[in-house]
Length: 267
Image: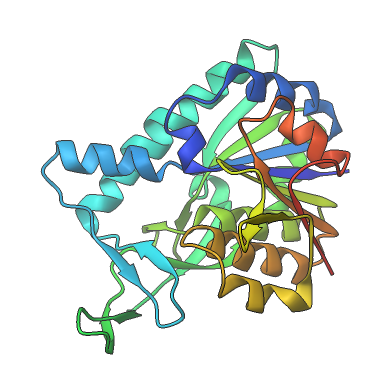
């Protein structure tokens, strides 16, 4: 069984809790792949460098960071240089042989650079802007990941993709995790965040079916909508189950494997 775990930026940027590292380490031998974010760390770094973070909203309401050349450099420094290394070191303290990677290594996550992005202007009108260094995922080198898993190594992946022109591109971490899970034929994708579950009308939702996702996405806040989008892409690519849960829980990954935590999305 291959399980893909996405550690959200809200968790990864503030120092991953030791209990989460211990939980991941305890499951390393089942075939575990870790993908992580780091948006808050990127924002902190860009601000310290005098680069004002810019966010855009798509016509369907999904908010994301706009990535120009300077911001892309900050991504490489903050997400790969700092967070990825910290996770590998933390797992090593528990005896786990982890390998820190970006999607650039061995063409692990391939993407097409978006020429234009659809966004909403300040007056609420749709408009097109230059795509910057934002990518649309086109492929995953699953053969490389299978070699690593065969050597009982744990890949730790920063969501920076590579284009056919060998450009580093920013891709959404949740959707990158979904693409990895689908390419690997994973039975489970765990999306760890800082809330216990998907919340609707003030109450946690235990289960969501694939055909209900679009309606639910319209009713949740920014950030969770992208997780639900990624969950749908994972299910469509053959992943059996997606669990969205709180990475600050005592044993979140183990409990997700046991189906006893968070919101479960299935076909």
